[in-house]
Length: 247
Ligand SMILES: Nc1ncnc2c1ncn2[C@@H]1O[C@H](COP(=O)(O)OP(=O)(O)OP(=O)(O)O)[C@@H](O)[C@H]1O
Ligand SMILES: [Mg+2]
Image 1 (cartoon, rainbow, N blue to C red):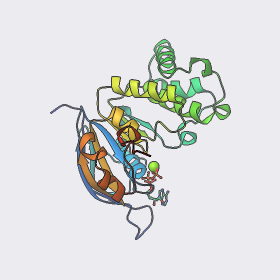
Image 2: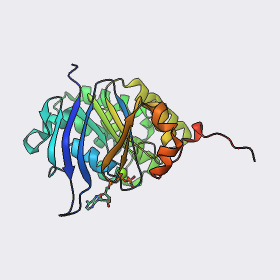
Image 3: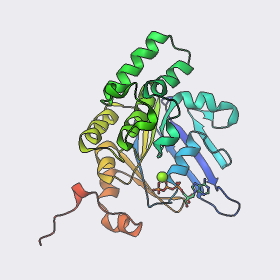
């Protein structure tokens, strides 16, 4: 088996006593998986991604990232392997300027400064924002913050990408560019999104969650064309797959 994989077994989690959010999830992700994580508001998508990267640790069951159990003492190692884009960019970006934020991870891994600068430049170019390098993070627009957040993970060359609503706030050109970047990244990625067209364009596997459980796990063709399944779980067909009904 390839070294890039995530194995989750019997995972349950709640933020508050007596209110379960994730309920006994067992699933494995493999090197070539591009997984679209879909489900209604509150289904548990973001919670699930946070647990994978150890931002919440109080769950029961097990999560192993490339054989490393996700727990307090392994967090640094796990996060070296995973690039994670938060749903909320304001949580992701914490330095003063875009350049400092994008440089943070490679600098933290002790790379020489010229390599850090090279990576920052390349990451900014990939998401088309070199002109924002020295701009204050707090003065960015919503979409610019999302692009800067994505650049912070592209500068660290991770094995695995976890992205929570990456297309939110992006204009059509930047959204299309992000689809291209993600399709070029040929390792494991998990993308939580309500933009089912984006999932259709980037994923080869889809997990449908509802109230903390995995309801369906299959191909985009099998799940994203299943109008009855999607409707039952408060979703709709992707626009590109909806039939145009005669007026
Ligand atoms: N810090 C928290 N404390 C208590 N409850 C929380 C907390 N964060 C999330 N929740 C609850 O956990 C449930 C799952 O939330 P989560 O953010 O994982 O859903 P989601 O599927 O990502 O939804 P969305 O599509 O709106 O992003 C929701 O009912 C939410 O209210
Ligand atoms: Mg969410």
